[in-house]
Length: 605
Image 1 (spheres, rainbow, N blue to C red):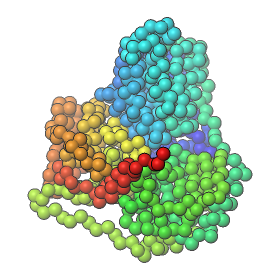
Image 2 (cartoon, rainbow, N blue to C red):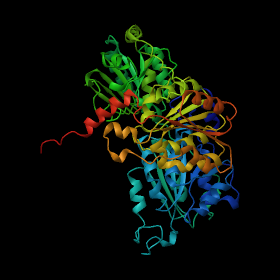
Image 3 (spheres, helix red, strand yellow):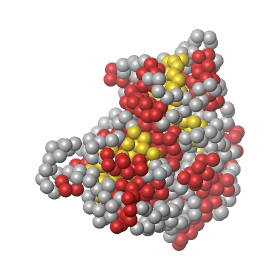
Image 4 (tube, rainbow, N blue to C red):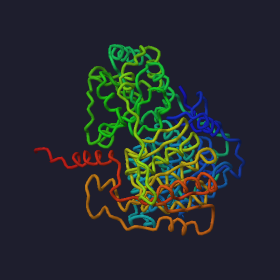
């Protein structure tokens, strides 16, 4: 059982090897303890900082406020830990989300209530996507608790628990540190719970405690050990036996990867099963990037009516399908329209296996189950052979004539050519979801988007955080719509301060295209901005930044060549002007089905 999480060396090695699907892991042993703390360093703030470094956090995304300033001093003082100042708390949370996707864990630091409630939306998104984000809040002076005093940055009541109550539903653990005696235990428990549960946690630290030493901090820290989770061996054997009996009788079974492969850290185990079974391999849309698309039997994205060509036909005509870590919601099921039957499905979740309409087996780790199953299944390539017979390669978009307005499919044809093992794609909520799904990811190419929560504007902060985590190893290519960019544009500024060299494609089609296809109205039209000019203003001559605006294919080619060549060390912002009705056919189909699901009449009372 692999339990170490967050080692910097392991993270670098994992990315270099191009493996996908999970944070860095290695053999079970304690996370390396920090060196003996000097008396001057034996404070609560430095203890928290050391723990963050130990689990693999090397950048904390922060917005200062009077309740967290002393704490920020101690985070800055920790060797190996950088404080990245963000323009607002929402983007700090999104950046921690993006960082956690690349590193395995992320962290943000904000001030009490005004900061905490501002970051709430981002933390909710991380919870929905099963990402361990440590949200640190500078809280009131410990002497003010229980005094009936009214403080600033609150809603005007003497009860300080409003922020805590808000975080209780979107974090897996909450620690309010207002006494030094139990601070060590609360901090360690919060961080270890985030890693074990792969969910965000909340840590509030009273503003007057961060600089105070305490005996629990001055001693050599107890090794930070994550207890290994083990499968129930009898249950594992029974689940494998039932699954083998079910699948070995099938004529044309298929294998589909889902997003919970990440939280189960089972990317390699999934590939082992795929290699052994001979089944065609598909991914659910939110699992793109977790399964290697260079695998010889990879057939694309299974997304119901908007699947990759010929993928849905093979999956839905199978007489048995193994879904590994799926999430079935209205978006991933295209308005609940998937043509799947429960009696044909094996559902493998991080700690549970359900065999068709038959038994369910709990306390079974996905990784253990997949590896045991790989040793028992008979190789069956029938479904892949059927796919190979019917498959017709996708055609290329028609060439644009000189000065012909640029089309979105032409844009993504050129983005496809930019991808390599040294790049990563961040796709914003909207039509970029669908266009980026059609990209074929080379070995080692990263891919992230936020499908479960779908918060527009997420990609700006996520690009900041992801790029910071993979700095000098991968170049991030972000595809962002104009409407989404207007929500969170400010932190392009932070990308410049961090000297990042991401390439941002701002797709300017004059509105909220995804909402237009679900339900149109005047509220989906937005004020057009001079986006390239805005980024120039943010740049203000400080840092390395290059912007351009393109309307035609020949301009796009020139812009990409410049971004990849002369400006490869710069943050590159390419505003792409397209027609407001230029959308993918997949969005048109998906939007109509989601609209139908949203507009269902109430059930009879």
